[in-house]
Length: 220
Image 1 (cartoon, rainbow, N blue to C red):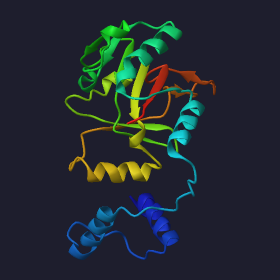
Image 2 (image 1 turned 30 degrees about the horizontal axis):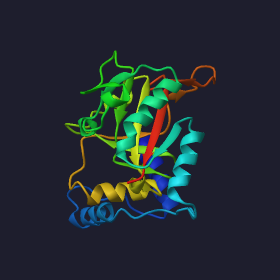
Image 3 (image 1 turned 60 degrees about the vertical axis):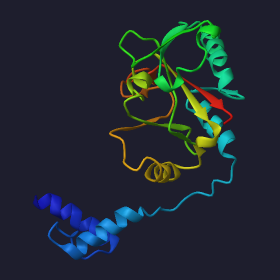
């Protein structure tokens, strides 16, 4: 504990704070902490003088995700079928229930509305929003938003409405605080295919999740 207190004390000194944070019993200090958490102030931000949709697509490509764009949801099933055919991938998979209204069978696909299991090769999801600065998808857990669908299959296909592409991570959290009312049990961030370079500094894809991430931008 002495070493811990020493480290935290040095951090406080560097920040110009003479005292340790207030304890639970310190009402004044506790109120100040709650006010700061409720205000969630932002730190320094870059200029971000770019167009969000173009920036998001650019960052997806840098992260080894592939990107397609369609006019509306009526074109999504055909776009998925085209991607699977071009990459010689299975034409069957699973999707979130919210995507059950898309005409998968007309596109020659067999897509089931259920969570992904270990044998599923293709998982199709929506997303809560996307972050242009980093090319990241933000997914929320819920009864009909199964995060396994984005984690277990080798191929993750995500539908991203262009109207839900935000500039920064801070914007995404602000949106989440405003809309649902209560935070979901899990918030997942997807920034391209799963990867690691832990073993001999060699980059390997698909270690902790999908080998492929394909983003379909939907103009809505």
